Length: 207
Figure 1 (cartoon, rainbow, N blue to C red):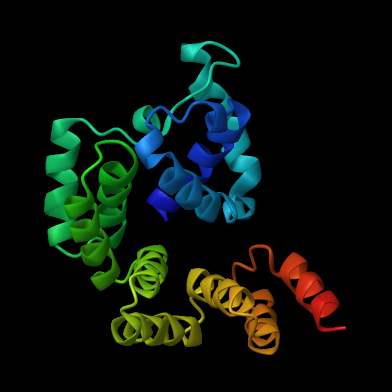
Figure 2 (cartoon, rainbow, N blue to C red):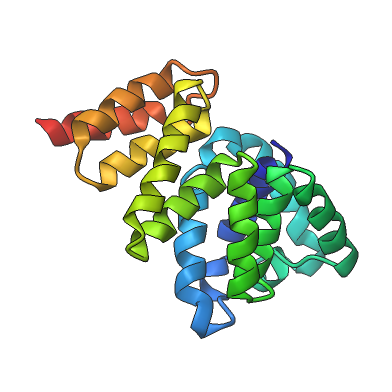
């Protein structure tokens, strides 16, 4: 959960300091916005913790000063080396952090794709869902569905992150009935995230 907690803190910082006004690279800003929105949707799990830590992080740069995705996700060379070794030994969180680095800071599509797949293969739920979405967008339906099955397997084993992704996956596809079933399963899990909000939205949409 270290990287997920790290992301929660980051997301609160990003919104507190107005990162939406500080997307430095126009070529990648749309992708950054999309991924950040995807991640920020989950920040409610640890919002209290994130707010406290996030405020402290911003003090060094001046109150109210925007922080760009480049600086937020930047890694020192030694950090890249350490995370690379960890990811190759099966650490999904390390692989996903490298994906974020190459996707949102040191823009390299080939390497970001490489580390996303490694993180997904190491069982990182967020990476698996992100890879599923990218494959769908590329028209790689067969491979995308293979990853969807892995997400379903993790969800069946009460992985809250996987369940959350399934709720939103089916919700976005317009399959409200299936989404609602998973939303109730999410509520019954150890980390219900924003299950109540999702259930309320889906129930209203079905009426």
